[in-house]
Length: 388
Figure 1 (cartoon, one colour):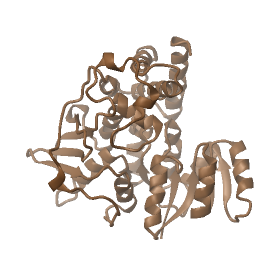
Figure 2 (cartoon, rainbow, N blue to C red):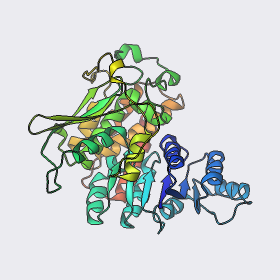
Figure 3 (spheres, rainbow, N blue to C red):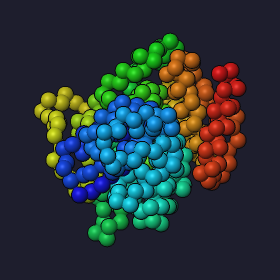
């Protein structure tokens, strides 16, 4: 029986992780953590009976404790202390980091220090602190198992093409695929007045609101490029983004001899989640299979980087290094929040990212405290610069 903690259990990845657990009777939930959706968290507690549940704030923790008073043996905590406790429970072997935002950094570091393998779905952890996370994981002999469909695809391709001594073959390119989002094919002038509702209509994937907006701006692909740089130790010049609108090819790896390996499948996040939980074992997963006889053709195209500037902004942040990837990420987080709350227009997301990257001072090799400080500084600069 393997025991896991799910940090972000009420979000898209968290709920799909629990779907995988329902299908596999040899996984037990030790801890569930959420933000503010305590009604769903209560339902999850009653089904999975964790020994620890964590909410964002003390008030919600008190409400939750009262609502599950009929249950015994379940501890309720809140805030960062609760997240770190969930990430370091002695009996836990894998921590699923499915929480959105930079709040995921500290629990991930705590889990690694405690010797836990990480099923990583929190982009911000590597985007802002990859220079800390990857060396620490190596030092502690901890596996970082990507849950993102694109990084899981690359991980699977590399794992399937290792040398006899277990080392990786030389990689020429990583090809990260993008669906193109809901606005694929549109030009800048056609995006001037798109609504939040328009941006949330992703053609292929069912995801949380923040990541869906990131997909629409192509910032999501930029974040994935930064993640891939750290996960696979590949220089940015060897990481390329291509558009594959059917979301059948989840990513590809080109090796030194010109061979290209790709991981294909239906767009179902449960596949990379289950693969991370059971790596290197592959188990049966219910669901639709690809029918190649019904495929009319796989489309591969270049992203429109002039219209969707999030990708180039990410490469710039990666090139400048230091805290610039934190500034890029923090600016995007803040801007997407403003867009979702209908305080700015869609294209202003790019304006805010560019403004922050030009007006917040970079620092080399930031520690965790400096990373969190740069996040706050970025938000303050944007509030002042855009009168928010």
